[in-house]
Length: 231
Image (cartoon, rainbow, N blue to C red):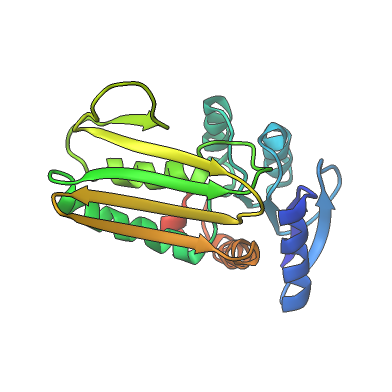
């Protein structure tokens, strides 16, 4: 495929380098704002502020789109959903295979343990990451909540003098140094603790996952897809 890369930051450069190393596809565009680029797939690792223009471009050019950018608003999400009625779109907060297997594991575990275990999510990233909590943490949270048959509340960080609510899910964001990405989900029971953890040791895992996912997306019909539809 001829792949257009939207965004020129560190992650986009890693995607471009990985495509060139692989030799299977070609980079036909590399820009923060797309104008006259042509290709058969767009991979987006840009900034959420650029998504509106990107969606207009992809729909106008009729090019499938993989969005790996996080931090977008509900308004942009609605535009993504509307655009997916015209082109195939894959929306992914994390393109690594390991994290998406982790989601499936959490769904199975939560279904069994939610009544007797307290659930806490901890995510760690480098000090330049803008959004907190991470898009991946939100994905893990949503996977957990779908398996709990009663209403839950989220506690972002924790401070003050009050006891933990039984139906609460804690979410904690740590920022420092050059941490690529680490996500842990803890299940705290009586006299036992279960931890499910994924650690990214380099950003290349996201590039490889994005390229593989783009290959699968290219064969999909018009619609909105998530990584669970791809793996």
